[in-house]
Length: 478
Image (cartoon, rainbow, N blue to C red; front, side, top):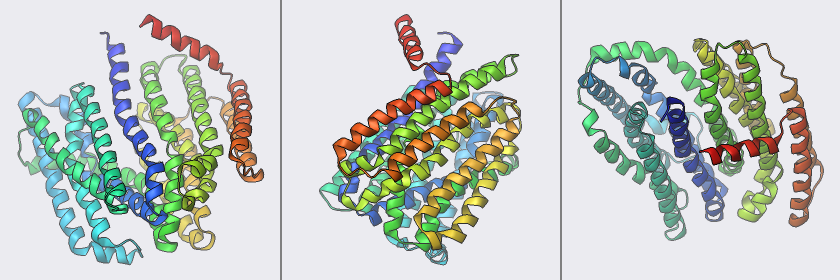
């Protein structure tokens, strides 16, 4: 198999390993919202968001060092020692972090004004995060060894087991929010041993503090940007918990879950485009190639933005408990931020290709500052609408900064007018025209969506039929 085909194949398999668990989480939403109250769902989402932050904080971007320096080791034994040293340090560091949280966490969360009981919810989340750490470096190892299939299979099975166990605990044992948290903790606990087992032949356990100093000198400058990015994505939930109530947190979290389905579209599309960006970087016609890729990416994203936004009301009415129905109102407001964040991936790739990686930290810190300050000022006065709009504003500002530093002199008029058309359609169909009959609403919105897609096809100069035929021919050749 050629190097190009191998890259595409591996990228596709990795993408599946990320996309399918996200789809499983989306599939579970209609079921969980029939058994969980908005408060319960808000607690689960809050703890999951907290775990994402703790994972970034506790890992110190060490996996980046491992990916960069693995092939710089002189032999396989040194590679094994590197994995063993990094793993030992991460586990020791996070064991200390867990102890600190267990001792002082209750007072810390009380100081932030959290309404979520520290025991058992936060404690379960912290322990779940600790066991999840065992999988990060072994997963990076399998990427380095170009063995994506075992890793992808493990991730998919993990998602299926977690979903199944959650549903059993919710439906048959009535554990509500604890069901999802216990399921995640149990699966992460057993998976920690699975990853220890599969990496046993590639690791020599040791703790070399001299090497750790070198590692930290490399990774710590990356940490502020990484932490700031996660602060941007979770600060709204933390401040909703502080200034509003758990019911509001649940409604917002449900709306965000629907909006974040766009990430499934964006991640799959980006993984398809990314190799071609790096491959053509520096070529004479790179700007034209990038502009075509960008327009195609925008096209996929806007279709996702349109469908998720205008059909959110019908989705909640059909698939969820009546207590969650009002969440549709916030989906369009949140999803614009998801769109901006997704598009930032492309421009972030250009910044990386130019070697200006520190800019990414500046972008993330700016977004975090906007999110925290504006939510603190306006959230207590205007409620959930503030969190939704501020989230999109922060992500959009981050996109503009990325575009600025990418320094590509290309036209942005086609994406702008396409977005403007989609936003106008969404505003009319969601906020101006109240349609109570579900069947009539779906028919009307489907018709409008077809015309809106035709509109952005013309603006972006994209022929979807030509793309489809090209894809079919490619499949036949393969």
